[in-house]
Length: 255
Image 1 (cartoon, helix red, strand yellow):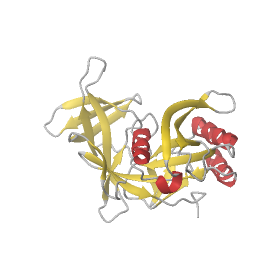
Image 2: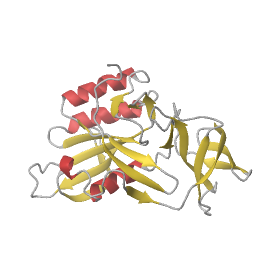
Image 3: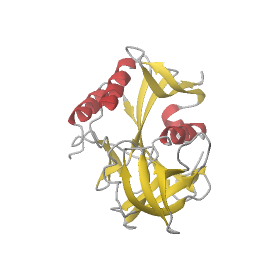
């Protein structure tokens, strides 16, 4: 098991620069610290509310490949924080959360929540119309008290209000559908929503009602019908990502 504050993913040091602009959803122009201006791929296609700061510092990965159109990938952004440090690095690569949560499970960091797990599968077809894919499907060991399959939907969470992590940061019909699908498989299986809080300065999670009131309503319905919510927080650094523990949640953005 990985202790709180310890590294869960290690990588070569990222390269820092200043964000000039993000455009066409997938592209960002960045001035590196040596003065070179590069165009990086932006894996986050959403509005990046509270994270997108032209003129702010960012971190990139250099990964040239014949299979890639761009040699650079935008990985992290420095943002204002409510913590004593006043600044916080946020993970903006939306392809990372599934890997982070899988690593947590494999390291037994969520054994208290899930028990012992025998297999983990990704992108398994499920849902009322068999047109959705669950992020992670867990099969517990036979020795577990609860041997139902565990369906996990992971949501990258970077927007916040003071110390509250919020998802979504815009209207998400896809996210609404995922909540409905999770409700449809309970109680035959365990249905779990994991907000992946990609920053280490927040204290709890809530649905982003102000961005998507319907999602907030569906969130509360899902919780009342047995869908579990397990917010998992991480700290982002130049050469690693650290595990920051499970956070509490509340049912609405407003107190």
